[in-house]
Image (tube, rainbow, N blue to C red; front, side, top):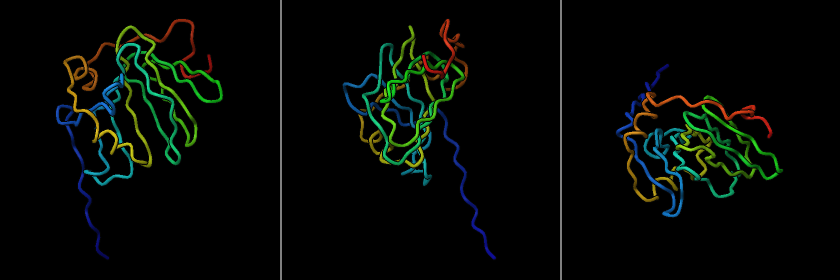
Length: 161
């Protein structure tokens, strides 16, 4: 029996492709794992939302999408009318077919580690987007040296509001 050793992937934040899917978007992506280049079944990125930024309403036909909040506060609005407040340390997983909007509700940028399985064309949209750059704050948060943020007062993170 022969086995093939798979290559591991190590990518530094400074080496990530950074782009905005559309010029009018208020969020950008630092792609950590690119399934097209890295031959993985998933895509992973740090999604950075400007103050007041949000995604357009959308859903994924076959993919699960996970958001882990690295810094900031936000909200997820779903097509069933539910609203979920999110803050640093929270994990949100959206199943296939669930229409949603993620929005930054804080006074500073919202940073989320985003993972989509399977890719479902997400990496292609990021790759084909407008090239962007990370600033000093972005690099600090991605590197884990950003300033911790408190949970939204009076809310229970990731629970219906």
